Length: 120
Image (cartoon, rainbow, N blue to C red):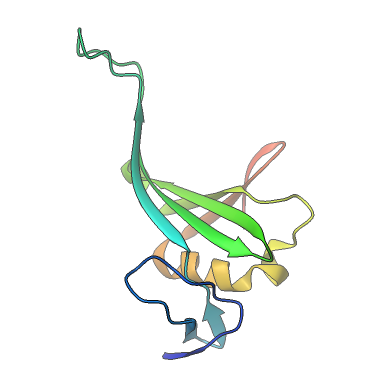
């Protein structure tokens, strides 16, 4: 593994502004521009009841002016899903840096398409 300069990396929000990528097995890892730990719930503050509670990490990547979003729910941290990605993008070829980043962290990477989730 080695860090190298990479022209496709945009400035990130991790406290440094270097355009660098991690090289793993010949693939360059593209760092996300933003990582958020979020909770979505319909908690009623009066009664304390809720019908859903989603606790997740959300990754935002930049690719040629387009935001690519991936999400991993904390109750199944072995899986991440790419949710926001234009249909015309060939993920395996065009987003190999994003996939390298996600695959280093998650055994299963999926993509949301019109028919549902499909494993990449």
